[in-house]
Length: 267
Image (tube, rainbow, N blue to C red; front, side):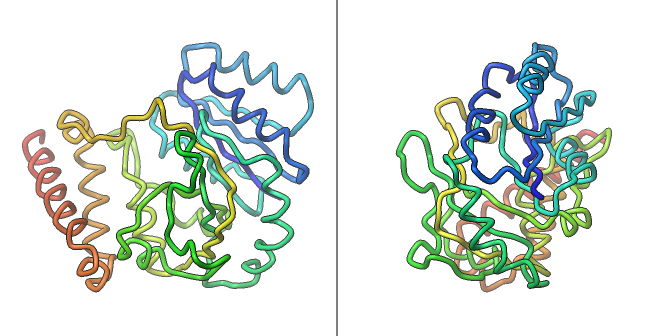
């Protein structure tokens, strides 16, 4: 069984994209687990309308606003699925994509204890192409995320994880730390596990609304989380990968210094 996790916060008008993409799947051994991170719009009513259609299994959990990583942790701890995918509230799965992955690729990793999951291709809406071209020449290969980092080929991918392993790598968030960048997770789990990189499309993300630039105010607001993340990167990422990607190394050092400054400043 698979758990498809969607975190949401005041995105009632966008959930329909994700929902409709789930209805296109011929593979139906999944639950859609929605964690509402304190929405004040009509998200709950929208989800209830989906549930009333009774076309797929939908579970809804509401929590007071605590951040996306807190929602992730809650979903992992409440997931019924052996496998776990995160799909944002305004993103979607490729039409009937799950069947291929669970028929062909999941059996490849099921009994491999060194592999935490699959990193599949995600299609960027604006270009209609794969956002990440890392390892694109092979249909599939087992690699470390560290090698992807060192390649300097960055981009969005979508992952299928083994849920039981995720439970050992919950984000270190709490009442005072609501945000920790995702790279903390990847740099931490990669000290022990690898991925099966599959160059087939699974996800589809809409980027016309996104702005991923890190502002000074955002960095200061979440300084502790950024410091945790950058410290993990400096500790865990092998030197050879930083040497292959020197720009990332410089950025990591700069962010670590900035985050450290803001943490000290705001004590």
